[in-house]
Amino acid sequence: MSNHTHMVLFIDESTANAWSTQEVLEHWHQLFKGTLLTRQYCRGELVADYLQETLANTVDEYRNRLMDISCFMRLLNESIARQANQEDNCTGRFWEGRFQSQALLDESALASCMAYVDLNPV
Image (tube, rainbow, N blue to C red; front, side, top):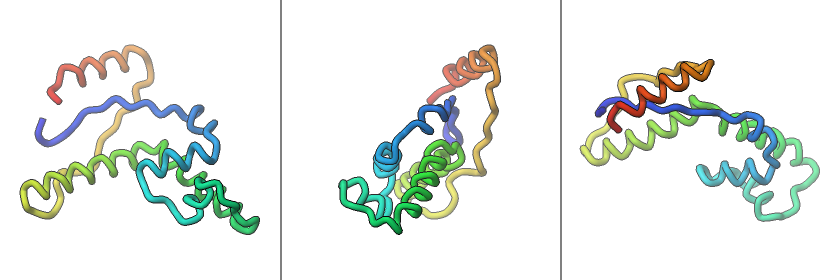
């Protein structure tokens, strides 16, 4: 398929919610640079008391973004679009529109969807 992708995603909220501050920041820093404060925390440096609330709010925001399918798709599509535009020496939108998603609420829906994805070309 030259114009779209199919994926089956599972968001494990209970696992992500159980991550420590360090784990959230390590996951985030694999994707992004983070802030001076989050990098300072990950290096094991002392974070001032007045910055603790800011750090906690940042970690909550990062945790939510790491579990957000919209955020994931935006990052995935952006990187593919940048690469394709660079290869074609052009600019502008690569994807026709936003992603579409469908909740799979039972085992038969999951099996049907996985078979559909498996039978389509990569």
